[in-house]
Image (cartoon, rainbow, N blue to C red):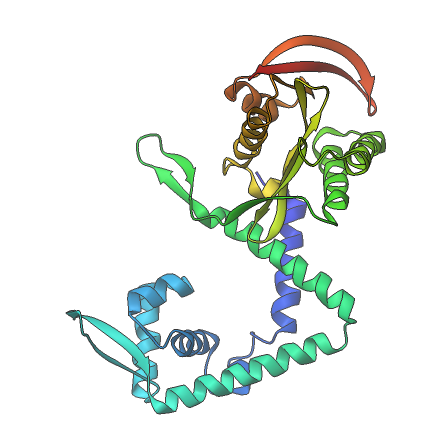
Length: 319
């Protein structure tokens, strides 16, 4: 359940942003088109041709409402329909020469509007703005990637999510440390001493890296960092799995399982006989992943760390 404060924050942002980009006036971007009409013209101009059904799905418009918009644009000579060559029962929509001219004008005005919006923002801050927009787009798209399992009536994540897993590169360690510090404070209440611990692990990994037998993997969702895991050498026969993290917006996609799988496969390929890790009894999601991968608990130890009384768990997997 979302927080009322979060709901109001999103509503406030919507009011602010729609005002800044000028979608509220009846005539969009100074044209003779409403926002819905302009979206249809723009999408047809971008795609060249498509059916009304495809257009409705792309723009997420009710087909009844979309039909009224299309009829109005046809009356104005902006678009036309014709039978699809492969199936005469399907109507393909295309822009007329008048519609194409309108599309080019809308595209040009939109670019001018956004350029003007960005012109007063320093270049470095523009990059921050674009990155923030990517994060918003990714998180809000996450909910739309859900389908329903008809048997269980439970959400099932779409495999269309664009996930890539790569080895680390400069800049990743900062993301790993900051993400661990922020998320574990927000979700577990752990103080900055946990962030310091993560920073020390990352520092040691970089400075002592054995490239032949150690790895860091970074998962990306739509080009943005979304997860991490490290495999480091303990001794000749044993490796340690460390710093497994999956960002909130990428959870439920099997990403944690994939990252742990990378560690196991790499450890076996390098001839390690055992893979070990240290976690806390309160981290239910991570413990579920470890158990499903074949790890088992070999030791539990109470301790006080990061401002809390915790129970540390030592897990092992024979390779």
